[in-house]
Image (cartoon, helix red, strand yellow):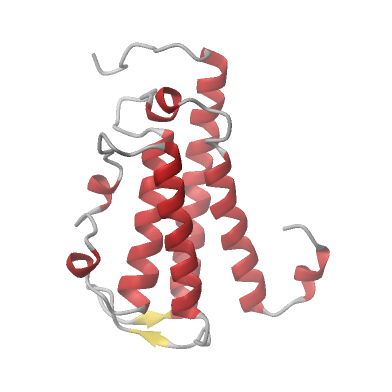
Length: 169
Protein backbone atom coordinates (compact mmCIF):
# COMPACT_ATOMS: atom_id res chain seq x y z
CA UNK A 1 0.00 0.00 0.00
CA UNK A 2 1.58 3.16 -1.19
CA UNK A 3 -0.16 5.65 1.06
CA UNK A 4 -0.91 6.07 4.71
CA UNK A 5 -4.32 7.45 3.71
CA UNK A 6 -5.68 3.90 3.57
CA UNK A 7 -5.09 3.56 7.32
CA UNK A 8 -7.99 5.91 7.94
CA UNK A 9 -10.28 4.75 5.14
CA UNK A 10 -13.31 2.57 5.55
CA UNK A 11 -13.11 -1.19 5.81
CA UNK A 12 -13.84 -1.84 2.12
CA UNK A 13 -11.05 0.45 0.94
CA UNK A 14 -8.65 -1.22 3.35
CA UNK A 15 -9.65 -4.73 2.24
CA UNK A 16 -9.31 -3.78 -1.43
CA UNK A 17 -5.87 -2.30 -0.75
CA UNK A 18 -4.60 -5.37 1.10
CA UNK A 19 -5.96 -7.79 -1.51
CA UNK A 20 -4.43 -5.75 -4.32
CA UNK A 21 -1.08 -5.59 -2.52
CA UNK A 22 -0.92 -9.38 -2.24
CA UNK A 23 -2.12 -9.91 -5.81
CA UNK A 24 0.73 -7.73 -7.04
CA UNK A 25 3.25 -9.34 -4.69
CA UNK A 26 2.51 -12.85 -5.97
CA UNK A 27 2.89 -11.67 -9.57
CA UNK A 28 6.14 -9.87 -8.71
CA UNK A 29 7.77 -13.12 -7.57
CA UNK A 30 8.04 -14.05 -11.26
CA UNK A 31 9.81 -10.83 -12.27
CA UNK A 32 13.08 -11.48 -14.07
CA UNK A 33 12.80 -15.27 -14.00
CA UNK A 34 13.12 -17.52 -17.02
CA UNK A 35 10.27 -19.78 -18.07
CA UNK A 36 12.29 -22.74 -16.78
CA UNK A 37 12.80 -21.11 -13.39
CA UNK A 38 9.12 -20.25 -13.11
CA UNK A 39 8.23 -23.93 -13.74
CA UNK A 40 11.03 -25.45 -11.66
CA UNK A 41 9.99 -27.77 -8.82
CA UNK A 42 11.96 -27.15 -5.65
CA UNK A 43 9.73 -29.04 -3.23
CA UNK A 44 8.32 -32.56 -3.24
CA UNK A 45 4.83 -31.35 -4.16
CA UNK A 46 3.94 -30.10 -7.65
CA UNK A 47 4.18 -26.49 -6.41
CA UNK A 48 6.09 -24.10 -8.66
CA UNK A 49 6.08 -20.32 -8.82
CA UNK A 50 4.10 -20.35 -12.06
CA UNK A 51 1.76 -22.96 -10.61
CA UNK A 52 1.21 -20.76 -7.55
CA UNK A 53 0.14 -17.85 -9.75
CA UNK A 54 -2.17 -20.17 -11.67
CA UNK A 55 -3.66 -21.37 -8.37
CA UNK A 56 -4.09 -17.81 -7.08
CA UNK A 57 -5.93 -17.03 -10.34
CA UNK A 58 -8.21 -20.00 -9.67
CA UNK A 59 -8.83 -18.67 -6.14
CA UNK A 60 -9.90 -15.28 -7.53
CA UNK A 61 -12.30 -16.93 -9.93
CA UNK A 62 -13.76 -19.40 -7.40
CA UNK A 63 -14.42 -16.85 -4.70
CA UNK A 64 -15.48 -13.91 -6.83
CA UNK A 65 -16.98 -15.39 -10.00
CA UNK A 66 -18.42 -18.58 -8.50
CA UNK A 67 -19.23 -17.65 -4.92
CA UNK A 68 -20.20 -14.00 -5.43
CA UNK A 69 -21.17 -14.06 -9.11
CA UNK A 70 -23.03 -17.36 -9.00
CA UNK A 71 -21.39 -18.98 -12.04
CA UNK A 72 -20.40 -22.62 -11.50
CA UNK A 73 -16.84 -23.90 -11.85
CA UNK A 74 -18.01 -26.06 -14.73
CA UNK A 75 -19.42 -23.03 -16.55
CA UNK A 76 -16.24 -21.08 -15.82
CA UNK A 77 -14.07 -23.94 -17.11
CA UNK A 78 -12.19 -24.16 -13.81
CA UNK A 79 -10.41 -27.06 -12.19
CA UNK A 80 -12.70 -28.87 -9.77
CA UNK A 81 -10.37 -28.69 -6.78
CA UNK A 82 -7.39 -26.71 -5.51
CA UNK A 83 -4.80 -29.41 -6.22
CA UNK A 84 -5.72 -29.46 -9.92
CA UNK A 85 -5.44 -25.68 -10.10
CA UNK A 86 -1.64 -25.78 -9.62
CA UNK A 87 -1.10 -27.97 -12.70
CA UNK A 88 0.59 -26.31 -15.62
CA UNK A 89 -0.26 -27.00 -19.24
CA UNK A 90 2.51 -27.07 -21.85
CA UNK A 91 1.22 -23.80 -23.30
CA UNK A 92 1.29 -21.96 -19.94
CA UNK A 93 3.92 -19.21 -19.85
CA UNK A 94 4.76 -16.46 -17.40
CA UNK A 95 3.03 -14.00 -19.75
CA UNK A 96 -0.11 -16.09 -20.29
CA UNK A 97 -0.61 -17.02 -16.63
CA UNK A 98 0.06 -13.43 -15.54
CA UNK A 99 -2.46 -12.15 -18.09
CA UNK A 100 -5.05 -14.67 -16.87
CA UNK A 101 -4.42 -13.56 -13.28
CA UNK A 102 -4.85 -9.91 -14.19
CA UNK A 103 -8.08 -10.69 -16.05
CA UNK A 104 -9.42 -12.64 -13.06
CA UNK A 105 -8.57 -9.75 -10.72
CA UNK A 106 -10.27 -7.23 -13.01
CA UNK A 107 -13.34 -9.45 -13.24
CA UNK A 108 -13.38 -9.82 -9.43
CA UNK A 109 -13.45 -6.04 -9.07
CA UNK A 110 -16.38 -5.84 -11.49
CA UNK A 111 -18.34 -8.54 -9.65
CA UNK A 112 -18.08 -6.85 -6.26
CA UNK A 113 -18.15 -3.21 -7.37
CA UNK A 114 -21.70 -2.40 -6.25
CA UNK A 115 -22.01 -4.84 -3.36
CA UNK A 116 -21.68 -3.87 0.31
CA UNK A 117 -19.56 -6.12 2.54
CA UNK A 118 -22.66 -7.36 4.37
CA UNK A 119 -24.14 -8.78 1.16
CA UNK A 120 -24.94 -12.47 1.57
CA UNK A 121 -23.62 -14.38 -1.43
CA UNK A 122 -24.90 -17.85 -2.25
CA UNK A 123 -22.84 -19.16 -5.16
CA UNK A 124 -20.42 -21.34 -3.21
CA UNK A 125 -21.22 -25.02 -3.04
CA UNK A 126 -20.78 -25.15 0.76
CA UNK A 127 -23.39 -22.49 1.42
CA UNK A 128 -24.00 -18.78 1.90
CA UNK A 129 -21.58 -16.32 3.46
CA UNK A 130 -21.06 -12.57 3.44
CA UNK A 131 -18.94 -10.70 0.94
CA UNK A 132 -16.79 -9.62 3.91
CA UNK A 133 -16.07 -13.30 4.60
CA UNK A 134 -15.10 -13.80 0.94
CA UNK A 135 -12.67 -10.88 1.11
CA UNK A 136 -11.09 -12.24 4.28
CA UNK A 137 -10.80 -15.72 2.77
CA UNK A 138 -9.14 -14.37 -0.38
CA UNK A 139 -6.81 -12.21 1.70
CA UNK A 140 -5.88 -15.23 3.85
CA UNK A 141 -5.20 -17.36 0.76
CA UNK A 142 -3.17 -14.65 -0.96
CA UNK A 143 -1.02 -13.99 2.11
CA UNK A 144 -0.45 -17.72 2.58
CA UNK A 145 0.63 -18.28 -1.02
CA UNK A 146 2.64 -15.07 -1.17
CA UNK A 147 4.79 -16.50 1.62
CA UNK A 148 5.28 -19.72 -0.34
CA UNK A 149 6.17 -17.73 -3.45
CA UNK A 150 8.72 -15.61 -1.59
CA UNK A 151 10.50 -18.72 -0.32
CA UNK A 152 10.47 -20.42 -3.73
CA UNK A 153 11.85 -17.29 -5.40
CA UNK A 154 14.60 -17.06 -2.79
CA UNK A 155 15.54 -20.69 -3.49
CA UNK A 156 15.50 -20.12 -7.25
CA UNK A 157 17.71 -17.07 -7.08
CA UNK A 158 20.17 -18.86 -4.80
CA UNK A 159 20.30 -21.85 -7.16
CA UNK A 160 20.92 -19.78 -10.29
CA UNK A 161 19.40 -19.99 -13.76
CA UNK A 162 20.33 -23.54 -14.80
CA UNK A 163 18.05 -26.58 -14.71
CA UNK A 164 18.08 -28.48 -11.43
CA UNK A 165 17.11 -32.07 -10.74
CA UNK A 166 13.54 -32.87 -9.74
CA UNK A 167 13.47 -33.24 -5.91
CA UNK A 168 11.03 -36.15 -6.19
CA UNK A 169 13.23 -38.22 -8.49
